[in-house]
Image (tube, rainbow, N blue to C red):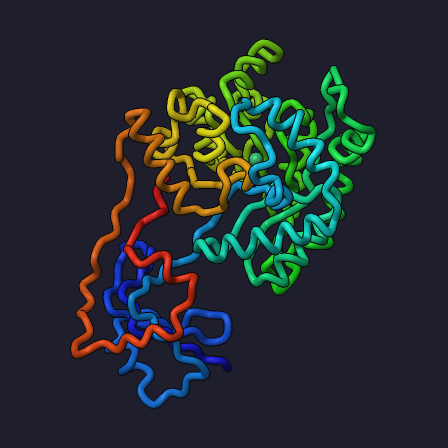
Length: 398
Ligand SMILES: [Zn+2]
């Protein structure tokens, strides 16, 4: 057994049910499991005489659980700064992102995953939900395995081409984005889930991920949710991203996106909706009753003027029992995959919109005693990963 000791940590945020914060703490890791967390003095007593394969001095640093990015496009890592900042969602996706995705090779996607993984680990994110690779999840799965992070990926799918094909789309753009039929899309996605779910000792998970909205039929939305349930996995897609999308749905189908998904039978506890900006008060109950989760991406909302600060209802969703978490979306959307920046922007959105702090949690000090005596502070083994996060911060609220 390999045993690691991280000692002399200034703070440990446990994020346990009591939100305890340990001052002057230590952590013991045995193989790939946390074996003990507590005040340095208590850990020293508990492990008196024990041998450690490695000891890290955590002085002047803070330890906390890894963050989870609940909405990400790994493939877009190299689209950063590529796309003009002053465009709304539709031309951004149709005119820039879709041709970009169509040109991405498997090698591009593998290197994107490596770079995204490094950026995430350096900023405290240890798990993510990716919308999926272009054609084959393999380069992303192999990147996850290589970089040491945890991730959920898949094969992003759509089955409904727009009535009018943009003139600059090539045959390859169309072939990469749209399956010939719903059945074909479901068959291919299932094959990838069978192949990649549980890969790399379980660090790779594979879901039935689709684009969502107009590029996907209701049959595809419902089909992936049912297949995901049968396979014990999940599905994620974009929904209710903007007011314009909601108004378009109302015009075509007589109802807003969340209501339409509800009527179609597509919602469920294994569904994560990205954005969900345009949500009516009565639709919050539909999400809560179905157990459907929401990934709020404040960077994308601000950049794409999606309207989160005007009509977003994230605090109301949380109060209504909907799980709401933060996501970064593509790196192009806000220039980084730093979840701490999202937390700050989320706070800015709240202030702009006049959202209250209802339901937000504050870390509480635990009753454990401080360690006594002088604390060693060599700082020689301090990793870059810990250095940025010295101040105790709670980032689990949305
Ligand atoms: Zn997205």
